[in-house]
Every structure is written in structure tokens, then in C-alpha cells.
Image (cartoon, rainbow, N blue to C red; front, top):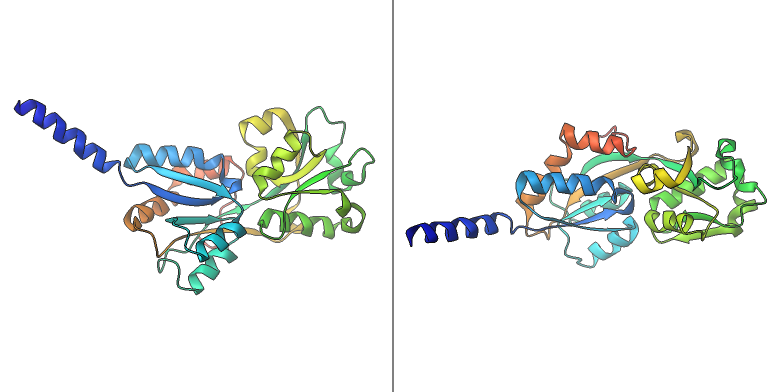
Length: 253
């Protein structure tokens, strides 16, 4: 009987230790990298991580209106900064965790020669071009900047198919709804897209730096666990994962 009681107490303690769920709002470019990051964090800490992916601009609006997230990982450092300025974040939690990159991506079977760079978007075979909506997706703004840098915007803007976030943008190309797309390098390096497509890295000097940052929200009820996750993001093992998915380290670290 005493042994049974001990086992029950042990199971209860384990359940309590694994009961602190972290709710994370994350930019869609983190979709694959965070699968690895969250799995490792859960294994090491026994805290569950529930990640919702979407556009940074939409998350910003939701958080302003009280969305119950613990952490916000944005693809644009400007959104967390605005939340901090509004007093909606845990003081001192602002962390520039990575720099994103954009690439041209097309299916392997496509006859398009991506080594032409953005000029390939003028190819007569390109009827639809997928980009993220620049109104609320940082990768969409970067895509538009790169296209304007090459003086192509007026010639091709009528071909745009806009995704609500960079993940949906990638899906447009993989599903055949667009002939080519400008997506995050982190998605192009994911196993599925790497096997099914080809990409060309758009030079960094053709678009503003995609500085990405995270904050802990003041409304979080799991602040200690959130701080633990943010600290975990700074570890060398996690930075290696981020590097594998094409993220550069932020100069603000």
C-alpha cells in the first residue's frame, strides 16, 4: 500500500512538473526550426510548448487586444519594440534572436533558371509570383524592397499572389498556385522544400535587414517558464539549430 502511494505521488509530481504549458506566438518562418527547438526544450525541462504560427503583424494586433500568449517571436523587431513601448512586455525581455533571409524558390521540375536572379520574374513563363502580404508580413516587405531595388515592381506587381504569412506563400508555390515565389530561406531549407525545389539567395543588400526579436508578454502567467525558454534560445545548441535553418545571428545580441 505504501509503495502504491509512493508511485501515485511520483506520477502526480511528474504531471505537475509537466503541467506548465507555454503559449508562443511565432512568425511563420520559424515553423520548422521551432519544431526542433521546442522538442529539445520539452525534453530538457518537461515544460510543454504550444506554438502558433502566423504573420507578425497579425500577432501584434492580437496581442494589443489581449491575446493570451506568453512569448512573441516576431520576424520584425519593430513589433516587439512597439509592444515594449506600450508597456505590454516584461521589462528587459526584448531579445533580438536572429536575422532572416529571403530567396527565390521554384519546383525542381520548373524550367526557370533561378541563376538569373530576380530578372527571371520577367520570364514569359511566369504567370503568378507568390510573396507574403507586405501589409503585415516582414518577408513580404523585404520581397517588395528587393523587387523595387531591381526596378521590376511596375512590370510584375500584377502577377503577385499574396500569402497571409510566409508559410502560406511557400504553399502557393509548392501547390502550383504560383510559378515561383520569394520565401524565407528557413523554409527553403526545410526537408520537404529542399527535396522538391530549388532556390537562389537574394543578396542581402537588396532589402532591409530582417531583424527578428522576441519578448515575454506582461500578461503571461508563466513568466518563469517563459524566461527559461528565452534563455534556452540563447544557448549554443539552439543557435546551431537556427543556423542550420539559414538564420544569421543578430548583431544586437
